[in-house]
Each structure stands twice: as C-alpha cells, then as structure tokens.
Image (cartoon, rainbow, N blue to C red; front, side, top):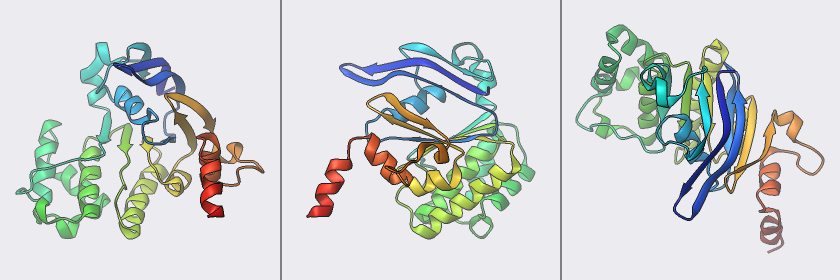
Length: 245
C-alpha cells in the first residue's frame, strides 16, 4: 500500500477533530474524503501531508514516516491547499520558475506543466490579473512541478464557475489516465467525487462513517452520492423538511 493511516487521533483543546481513523490507499488510486464542515477531513489530510502531527496513531507513506523521512517524502508529494496565494506582481511563468527552482528543475518542466494545465495564454500575465479558475490552475501547476507520486487537493474547485471546474476536472482525468499519480481529494461537490474518484471515504465527527467504491456504497435508500452523504451525516430529516416547505 502506498499510504497507510492507522488509528490516528487529533484534538484541539476540547475539540476532538479526528477520532481513530484508519484506511489504506493503493498506488494510483483516486480517493475522495467527504464530510460536512468540521468533520475532520481537512485535519486528516493535513496530518497525511505532514503539516500536523497526530496525537497518537501512525501514518506511513511508502513505508516511511514524517518523523523520520520528511525530506524524502516532500520530494514525492504535491499539494494544493484551500487558499493558495502567490506574489501578485509575478507572472505565471515567473511563479512556476520560482517553485521549480526549489526542486532544481529547469524551464523544460515549467513549459510542460503550463501545457498540461492550459496556462499558455496566461504565462506572461501577472498573478494579480488572473481569474479564480486561472489561479486554481496555477496552484495545480505548482503542485505538479515535481511530478508527485501523491497529490493532495483540498477543495480545489470551491467558488469556481462550472466551466472552470470542468477545466480542472479534465486536467485531473488526464493525470488519472496516465496512472502515475495517487490523488487524495477533499471536496463538497458530490459530482466531483463521483466523476474523479475510484473510492469514497465519508467522515463526520472525526470518524469514518463509510468507505468503498461508489457502486458498492449505493442502495435502494441512497441512489446517488448526494443521498448517501445526507443519509449518513444526519441531514436527511432536514432535507425532507426543506422539501415539504
């Protein structure tokens, strides 16, 4: 297994954000972590990314831990956070060249990710002039510079218009078809998880409620991911009340 999460816990004072979560992710799999706001999914991902340390439990990536192998692990992961900010007075190409230098990569790789993320027409544009969708494509381009084996995307299309969201999906589908990348995605868009991911993990109150391939999770009481999500996270009654009104 490429990623092993074993019985991890994380609390912030009196808030028990993650309570005994465990799962494994094979190489090349696209996995969606879903949950309501405050469910613990972002905290879980941040521990997987090495940005937070679990209070207890263990996370192994390719058999390695963040405590002992941080330098090695940083080389094989890419990540895009919910709000990624770049210097607004740099162009897209200058921004990518800056981050490429951290990995000792040259202009050839910068050109490759510009083409992959369809930023060619904006390569000379200042970051400050980019639309929301273009900024998200730039953030994705930065996360792909080092050819990551594992890619973490935390709500990458939140706030984007449908066209920009579809553009980002198509880029990720290209990566999926190539089969060289494992993706861990958090999102509030059920259609996004259905379209991109092989497996779904639904989290609430710091615990896994259900996980598996989408076709295995659905039944006569939950005909799609939206219905399953509402059913599991306790919103079904609320939805029915709204429908009645």
